[in-house]
Structures are given as C-alpha cells and as structure tokens.
Image (cartoon, rainbow, N blue to C red; front, side, top):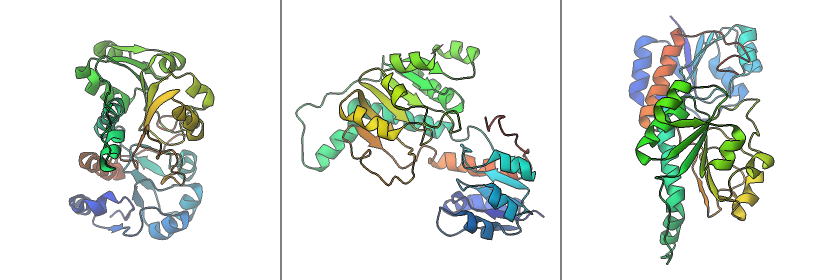
Length: 316
C-alpha cells in the first residue's frame, strides 16, 4: 500500500478528484494549509510518504535528502521548472508527469488575450467602470494578422489549430522541427530573429530552463516589430520585465498581455498598471477541465514514472 502525501490544491477544490485518488490509493494525506509551502513545510508534511502528488511546490535536493522514503514525485502541472532533475536522479526518485495536459486551456486564454489587446477590451472596460465613454473606440481584427509563435510544442501546436478559422499568417520558431505539422496547418518555420521582426502578434510558449531564462532581454525586445503585441502565457522570467516597461511606455511595443511573472505574486505592480498591459494571475492552466486533467495525470504518475536524466527531455 503506497503512502501518498498530496500538496496539490486541485484535490481540495475539486473533491471528486480526491475521491478518485483515495479509491485507488487509500493511504493519502492532504495538505490543507496555505498554497505555497517552504522546504521545511514540505519536509514536515512529506514525512514517511513514498509518493508525493504536488502542484508547483519546490522539489530540491534538501527536500529529497530529508525524505528518504520518497520514491516518486507525481507532478500535477504542465511545467517542471520547480523540480530539480539532478536531485531526483541523484536520489533515485522517479518523476510521474503528463506533458501538454493543459494545452487547450492555455491556448484558449492566449487567443482571448490577443483579441483583447487588438480591440483594447481591457482599456475600454476600465474607462467605462470609471465613467468615461471614449470618443475613439477603434480596434483591429485578428483576422489576416501575422502571428508568431515562439515554442511550437504541445501548447504552440494547439494554439495553431485554434487559430485556423481566423485566417492568420502563422510563423513559428522552435529548436525542434515539425515539418508535417507545419505543412498541414500552413505554418512557416523561421529563425527567432525573423519571428520577432515579422510578427504583428508575438506569443511565447517556451519552457522555463537555463536556455530560456532572460531570453527576451533588451536586445531581443529591440528586434520586435515596432508597435507589435507581445503575449506571454508560458513562464515568468523568460521576458525581462524591466526592459519591457520603457518599450511599452513609448509604444515601441504596442501592448502586452502577461499571465506569468518573474515573481509571483508580483511585488511591483507598475507593469500591471500600465494602460496598454493586460495582466492576469497565472490562470493559463486554470480551466476546470485542465485542472481535472492535471490531477488525473498526477494520479497516473504514481504508478507510471521514470527517473529523469538532467539535460534530457523534459529537463532539457
């Protein structure tokens, strides 16, 4: 009988998933406290557990050293940047994880953000709430625009499919090549430089790792087509927010929609308060259907898992 410690808050919010888990693994204990947990809190809660079902909680060498009974970490999440693959490998702890479980949720939010920026929905909503009726209420169509997708994996490909009815021109940049997919959906693969220079709307769907942290620094932001829209529903820290601020202020980048931030929750709200910024609190994967898929992926991960290799997918 596997002893399981559950820190993912999904099982608290959706009790039927808790029932599904305990029907399969009766020896479960559920964290009922604050969503964020320190290493010390995780160590105390894991105790003698043999498996952990986690959300975005940090799995570090210190945590694994203090929990020698732990043999499996099952991640109820799409990203894995909170897990140290070298520590898992060193301690022989396996990872259970299901890629792309929230792709529809994130892709749908991305499209809604694109349209909101083009039609200035967020700005006009604030105007109306404050009693203003702007005389100029002009926006732009999504149809016919050139959309650049940086990262064409699970989410980028789902976004490509959902964009088909809009008649957009799609550019994609990814270190992997997907020739059959690109041909089927009319996607033009380009370099990162061409993507930034040619996209009217640039949307980021990259994993957060050593190769992408700070990727969109001041130099990269300077390559973006003047007046283009920037959307980030991937991970915070990929875009240098401090470098982006002055470009939004003077219109070099027309507007931005961000669901993720380098610090979450953000301690500096100057970015979110800009009139041409739409900011949301990391809700990309928060559709109910996505939460159910992530939780069930975690349940499957308790039995279906492998010890990861640092530098090899998904830790590459």
